[in-house]
Image 1 (cartoon, rainbow, N blue to C red):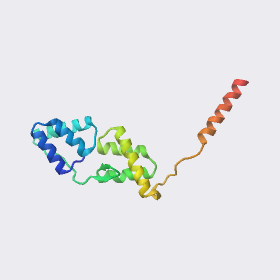
Image 2: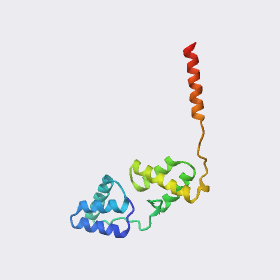
Image 3: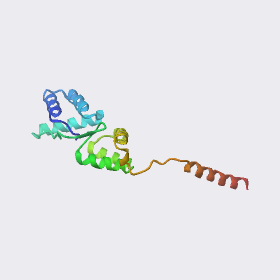
Image 4: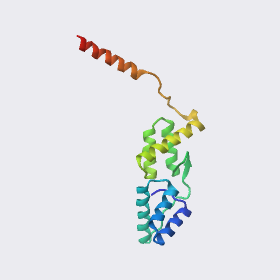
Length: 151
């Protein structure tokens, strides 16, 4: 489940108690920024926990950086992966922490990386690859193929 402040969880719980499931889903989406399907599943999970007498799990202190809210233990791993140039790993970490979809995770990591590059560019340990190596290799391959066709 995604991190909710205790106030947001209380508001969602009140909506569920009033039989306003759609309103609860809307409130959940506003509080977490997740897609509709994820919000619906999470609210249904919350509703089931309430019906079983369980408490709604909240995390009052998610880490928010660059518009990305994750638990503190995941935030360190995210930034380390981005600083090392491993965006795919960062996306996996974010998806596991947030339960969100691939598109949402990719957008969140792009935004976080952009913010980190502005705030502390010196922490990035990899150099962005620039150049025309691919073009040179393609040209060589093309020349080789042309040699075989002519011969």
